[in-house]
Length: 99
Image (cartoon, rainbow, N blue to C red; front, side, top):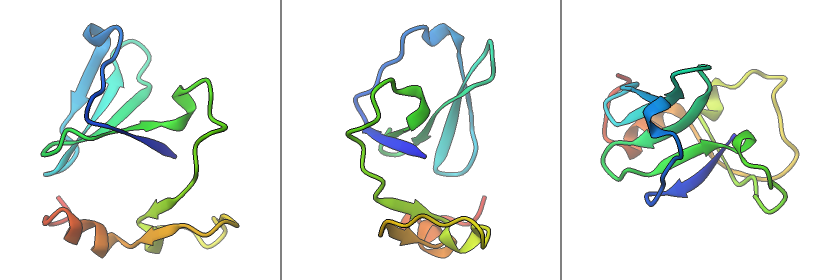
């Protein structure tokens, strides 16, 4: 679960962050010391999606969307209504193949 933090994002200790080019449209940031996943960043817009677990205060966040919904295990289900996107819809949105 990630929080859309927009494009104006900065991190303390940036020297300890490494970035992996994970697809044609996105990259992922990790801590060089412990390997923790720190963000998913869209290359074109520089939009950052940050794991919710990295935030101390989480009560004000709203779970509003799920992606790759067609790939989820059958036992994985949330009770609230969300905006659900399939794999095909995600790839169409970013105008790219699965690479």
